[in-house]
Image: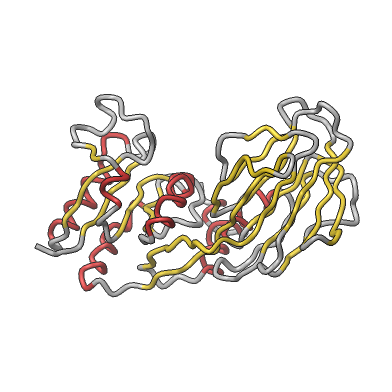
Length: 294
């Protein structure tokens, strides 16, 4: 029996019937690994995991060596904070959409045999520490792999934001909001809002406005040494929310300050394929790639 323990985290909405999870488990067991199945979410209704005994994730993380997700990039984002705090690498099996963070597609499970010698590359992805200060007191903190997003509420309206870097004025935004993204997050919401594509292993923060009224301002790519502060201006009672990696919205008040900086924590991504980021991006996003296949 291999002494390594691997947690399998299937998204039951993606891997219905646990078909892909069972196929991956078979390969890993043949290689001698110890495997356990944990839910990435709190919802563990009977029948969701097709007869698997679902173990408590927090408990199993204590002595795990690798976590494998079965779902989309959203499943990895949901677990990024936990694996980062436990310093465990994660490997994604993509069963969702584009899948920039996931390493393998569902039809590439045979690549898991490369884990047998436990000799694989690990990418360290930068993360963001996000805090909200209210009347000088910290009332909210979170850790994100992709981005921190400040945007208007369900009723569309222009919000006004003042952004400073290390206490010095950087820019003002009037529009739908702003995205502060890591390189990993540069291919997510930030890209849709017109931001640049940044190599995932780079160390930068990308500031991208959302539907800004100032057409001269596109985005900033900044050193990760900066601490960014976002303040709300002239918004009155208009609802404004903070999202970290698509988490539940945190309602902001007019005098709140959102502080974003590079975290000391990183998300470790296990790599088994030899495809570069540029190859993956071209395959999935550029004309002639996967997006154009019928």
